[in-house]
Length: 389
Image (tube, rainbow, N blue to C red; front, side, top):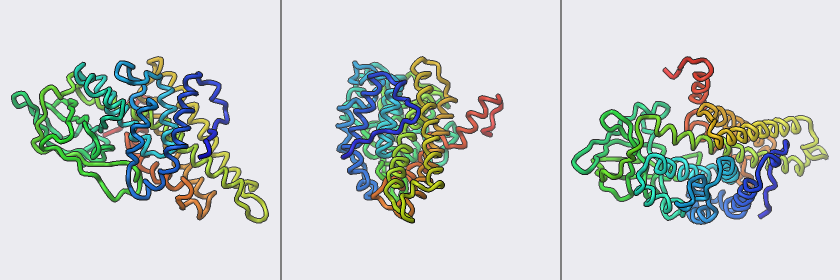
């Protein structure tokens, strides 16, 4: 498989460290060799390529920013972002898997868990020996997670969970679920293991988007878990939102990877497609489209890089993550749509990655905080007035 050369009009390469470039190039090669050749088949059949999980683990892709003592790579946040960028260049489902495993499962166990929980789960999750999922969204509560109705009740040396979660990536294949429920009115995190009585995770079918990703419901019916499975340092809505901050950061980078894939496909097609005796790249309208695409990719790259540097310095704000997620996903979707127009009818064929990325981005546009919710998060920050309700 031919290696992807990247899209870098402003020489952002010069702003990366040697280690960051090595991380990016390693994952870029992995995606070109292991993901791109198989992803259309999995997308078509609605299956997740689970065989690549171990390969991802071997490269240090799972929980890469966490400490080495848990078997993690201990990379900085810019390196993590570059990993997410390259994974989503392959497919949003691959980045989603890694994003959930890292930011929504390993991160909360590391941040809110006991030493025993960390020692048990983090090395297994890092090696791909265990898969995790994150249960926050409910059938009736998406943008308003604080309204959740899933409840936990203390009974002796156990907690009993009742409720349901929806749109859960990795749910059906997960060995452990990080589940958020109200305990005496306060939101707390719990670890629910696969096979626990009263817990089921049926896969959701019929998706036109993220077809190579496992999306599930989580159902809890008098589900009893040991008392030691609570994440003791979690408390309130702030805890799951801290996890979402990690995931949204990865999405901001991932969206640019998707945009790079569709731009590259459109550029190569425009150079080779002959109409009226010359390549369509020679026409002004096509050039305007390509310039628009490259322009927005470049802005997104610079946005991501500065956000990553701020994050590594401990100076970033969650509202800045919202801006990057909002901007980059919006323009990645627009870029995919423009790319489709350059490819014409060929743009709907799975010989090209454009339509797959476009369909995937329709989900990315609304998950981990919709475009509109991120607008209101930023609006509240700059005006001091909350407009959620």
